[in-house]
Image 1 (cartoon, rainbow, N blue to C red):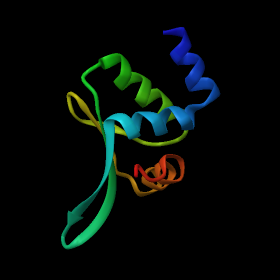
Image 2 (tube, rainbow, N blue to C red; image 1 turned 90 degrees about the horizontal axis):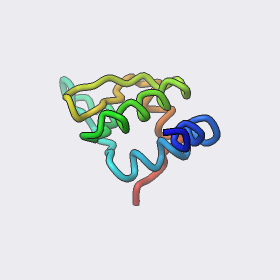
Image 3 (cartoon, rainbow, N blue to C red; image 1 turned 120 degrees about the vertical axis):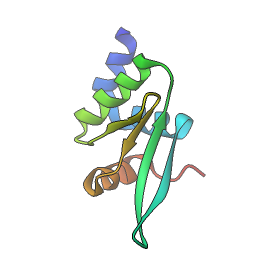
Amino acid sequence: MPWQEAIVELEPGKLLRGLIHSDGCRILNRVNGTDYPRYFFSQVSMDIQELFRRTCGKLGVECANNRSNSISVARRHSVAKLDAIVGSKS
């Protein structure tokens, strides 16, 4: 939708922050005894998933679908970018 595209262009960080706060989470993924932070964004709407992916791309955040309704951000530099953008959910 045009108003969503405008938000992606004007305020991509705020859009990602809102999407993560509403339908996402940050977890610690344990691999061989070491914890690695990771983000997940869950959404059944393909339009909203695409909006999330495009916004991540605009900000240089790598993401990938880990299930049909879930997008994962796991690369260290991408998680660090989201940490700076998203902040605490509390």
